[in-house]
Image 1 (cartoon, one colour):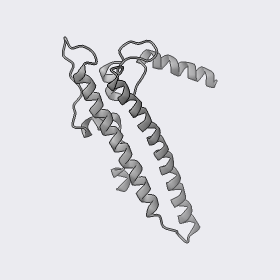
Image 2 (tube, rainbow, N blue to C red):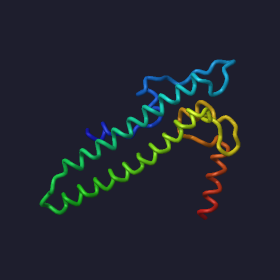
Image 3 (cartoon, rainbow, N blue to C red):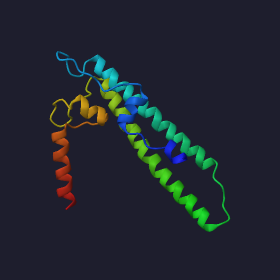
Length: 150
């Protein structure tokens, strides 16, 4: 039951947690106007707050740790802490990425591919609000990465 409460939230769930629906772009609306930037800012800030709450929750769990006399119980607890620390590290990295994305929104650079400069797209950004590459450039980067890995 505890694990259900702590289930990792996808960006689409963050959309609903933030009390937002998928953005409905109007026909004559300019890409990444103020309304769209505010939409994504709210999504990112909600996600960031949720990740910080998860990190704080992990600290509380570690403080409540019990020193089990049974070595198997102690090993299980240490493994659980190890997994939580990895999740915490991943969350910290994601928070940094979110902070960089929020700076892009503030500087009005958000929503455009870092590689080729074209629009990333509203739907892609709602699926992955921290995306910095359009789908074509991301696909090429993944192909290059696979080739380098051998």
